[in-house]
Image (cartoon, rainbow, N blue to C red; front, side, top):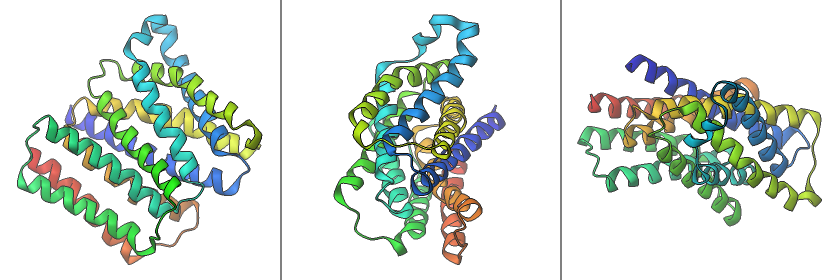
Length: 278
């Protein structure tokens, strides 16, 4: 069972990193706007998951989901896309995953989840590695995009906590995506005057929604069933180094000693949290 949880966690983290890379490529190199990207992403995820779930479960599958989960999903996806039009990758990663970690660790403390000194040290080491990764090129972020990314991070942390008890991760994720569709569509309707799309942007949004979001979130909900709040909070700090690696491979970004050192700190800190837990 431990190997299954590790596999699901690894798959989810890779999907999260891929989402960042796909969003950056789409909003930087194509004509698609954030509202259209978010809507196509959520609709694509809903369609793929519905095709997997509804033939075997029918309408009963929606019992696993909720409007709260859908609202949290929308509050993550839409601000995330809008924020990345003005924030650098480093600033965005720091705000997003910093807020995710704060949200989930606060929930762990509120639930009186015990943490050993080694676990706190590992969490701090992982956070220090994240700071090392993004800080050297950091500039004061514009307040509105920074607030949007902070909202996305807090919403994703809350969405993760909301799904920890999922009995059927596939059905719950499908229902949340379907329920989130009209919310995302409303944003697109409100931004219709500024909306623009092209084939490349649409394909990237579909890939993000159908594969790295829809199926990636299923893997994450499956992993959350056996991860503590602390573990779930800290392990997600592996995403910025993974996204940076994706930037090197797909965006032509340069590798550096700072990236290697930051990745070692993050991954070492995560390992400390898990080893101390055992």
